[in-house]
Length: 533
Image 1 (tube, rainbow, N blue to C red):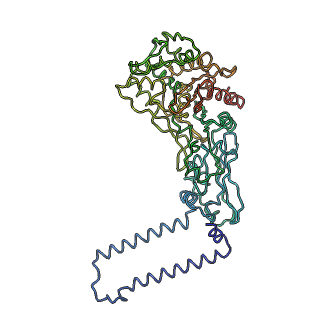
Image 2 (image 1 turned 120 degrees about the vertical axis):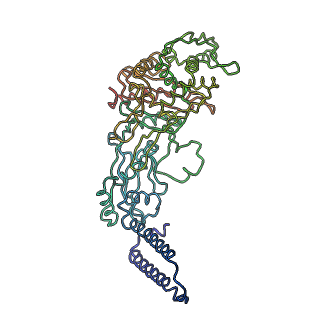
Image 3 (image 1 turned 180 degrees about the horizontal axis):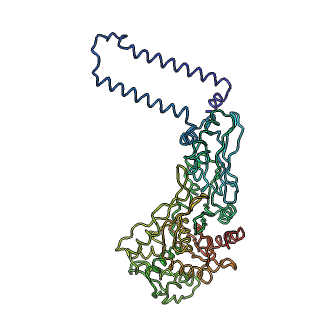
């Protein structure tokens, strides 16, 4: 390939190419003449002419072949005026002399104008070429993606490929100008910039606080869905893409965007969903929560509260919560209460609630010209009506319930937005759009108060910070493959929410000790940057 690139960039290639074209045309004309003279050459002129049907079929075949050639010619002669052709040449033609690689793709910027991706002209032995550069390396790799002449595109680079190349489907003038620039090489063609809703400073802090741990952070505005942070670790450096990243088994799963595609048991953060359903249905009762726990049948392990295990480790005896209501249960994160509540509400209610909260779905978060970026919401298979213990486990975010950090952030945002979930969006300027009502307005307002109490006096009190008024829910999700996952979701300020969030730390242990402090640090910086009132 290097030899071919050198040949095609050399001065003699122009005249040689014209000569090769002429030789090809002469050869084609000679073959065509031989075919037309075939009957005379082989002495078959005395035979009867073929039937009209055969002649018509032959004519149709010739016309069809000519149409294919004509269509191919339009791609060769005017393909640079077609967005699809440019994208195809960038992704599938790796030769350095390919003019599609001369395009300086537009920059990708954060909401404040910080450059997240740009093209730089690099001089090589074969000539100048435009290469993509990512100033922050791995920090934005999963959301911004990469644009590589060998490995293609991903993320926003893929979703907004046409715009970044310099054209839009409704802007033929732009594409005509782009084509002229490529063909004449009078000046290097440049694409259009794209501004995202992200805040680079917040994103970098999220990555820094996750550190060497695997996890994800999602921060968005509840009212319009603008995503401020979409971080996933561990990551990869889009400036140094190589085949090993794709071909070898990666125990770190660096290509996985844990924020939008990682499926985890949500643990106690899922109690927000169950509490919303209970409030929507008018539940206001009390449930007995014995210290020794509760189960649906004697042959199943008892579901217990975290205080039971803490007391046992300390050599003490825990007296239990006793008879409590929904507020106390949510603030103290009682597994015993919510397991019984889920069974009391029933299988049909559980299925209807998970459907209303859009589990088992995909939601568009980055709408581009030809592609879209999606977030998965989670996976909750149907629980058999006879499986009461499975329903009890699912009601506390365990068992068969799996969710993505992006989904849990969307749930927190819906509570903050009086029950309405607004589609998370990455591209600035897109119109906000609701994806559904997760709960009644009155229910959301009650949950806002409860989640504020959970931080002020409950399981999240370790991050209570004057001036922030954080509302949230901790989660410690049991994991069959190691230590528990640490969760924290919520919003701030509690009385007029401006940001909602979800933080996941794989194998981080208690949500109050690993995930919650990350959220607090992000909110402190967000307040300094003017995102919070």
